[in-house]
Length: 151
Image 1: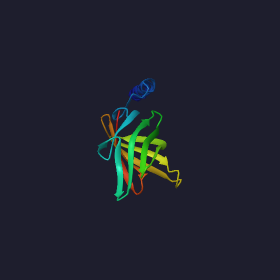
Image 2: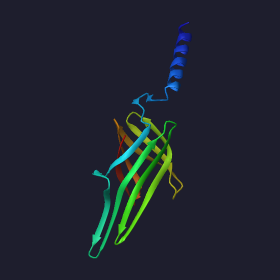
Image 3: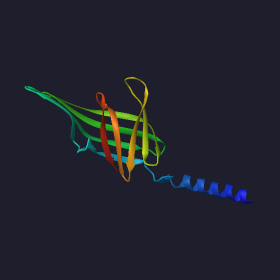
Image 4: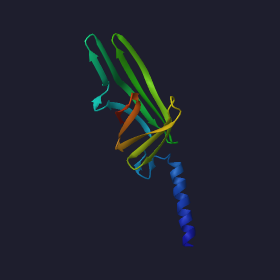
């Protein structure tokens, strides 16, 4: 009899979890939601992440804004808007990452396929309250840019 009560209790808990919309996970409040980009490499956005200047020439790369959406069904979408100034030429674009995400405590992993190499890559971040830090590759050649998001 004790075993059947345990099975019933587990079934009731599973049903409650399914009906609450997964507002909480085993680590507390769910990490799922929309996070707005607030800083890059320790500077509030828009933030210059690379600068090169020589007499008569200048180049800057800025992170201007972005969002990270962590969906309840395990998918994510990261959009980072960029502005490049090469002398007098200004170009803007959005770097997009999509894939699957998972969480273990405060650690968050974002899995995506790199469109250039066609290899699966992972971005590993750190969650603290409503803040999420993620070092992102693919913005600067050979370097990661540390992005800070706030929910």
